[in-house]
Length: 465
Image: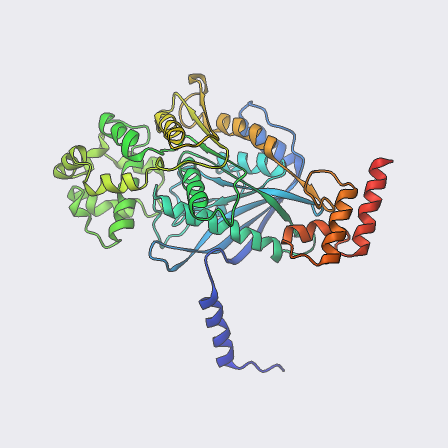
């Protein structure tokens, strides 16, 4: 019988907790393996006749938990969904897709997986993954967690959730064994619609401004997001007393109050007594958007105290106006190719958000930013989601690289140049990345040697023959 020293065990557990850092994989759970026929059927349902490419890869899905940080820098465990194209011999790009507004904890991507419960997640997961993208879906901070709130349209929370999930997914590729293993290459794509469009542009700004030594974004596709919170969105909320989804308004306001002033803030400072008492329970993750909509007054701004609404309307230094300004995403210049999409008939997030973002980015010196406005015929905010993603997807695949073992120079073909590069790596014992090590390990023995060189030679001879 093996004896375990209790104090030593406690030390190891404590050391593991202390040494954890943002981006560490905490746990993973296998969800499903999805065949080609199921993928085709799902895309037909999600697309509503729009038409999707034929799937090339079956899919395995996992939900994961990973370490992140909250606003005060302490560790916080977040979750997300990972959708992997099944292939032991190919390395794929990572596509981080940021989902639209979802307020029910039980409908977080990690909880529902790729299912008909959420056609947005299903369509992106089926289309992206079956086309050769390792597609990941961060739940976001507080989403799917009944003990926490979601900082809705708070820039930094999305930056943390996305960056740390990408790191955790790379760790997942090392944890899985046998046929479950997968390999990512050096490409990283970002995309998202609605709240996800905002989250995508927020994450892109965070990566390019503060993490460009660690991540290189291949292309970014922010779609129909509220990027101009302090301008377009404030004007919209003040000029349109009736909204398609009024629950967005208190969702933003309470999130900003809790994030910047703390969960113990007295909501009576901002809201009429009834709403000050009930907003916290309405936004606890157990009520749907439509349920909250039905409970709100005809003019959702009536939930605010008159004095707060007057100051909000007339004073740009008012607290909530300041937080909206701080989280507006216009004061930088994207570096990576950035494609903004928006429907001109959007009835929830005015398309001027994308126009103003595009104009500001060009003024700020960006020369790799593009704007596509979808016509009125694509419909409003909800019905434009799939057409936007299909348009983005067609460009995404133009950038996409899929690598096979032996393609040492990552040019898409295996030639004698790859053999020479691998030979140099072996002889000179260069320091190489995990991806380069994977490319050179043609015979799957966890090392690169003369046998791998012979395999590359055989591949070249077969292709030439």
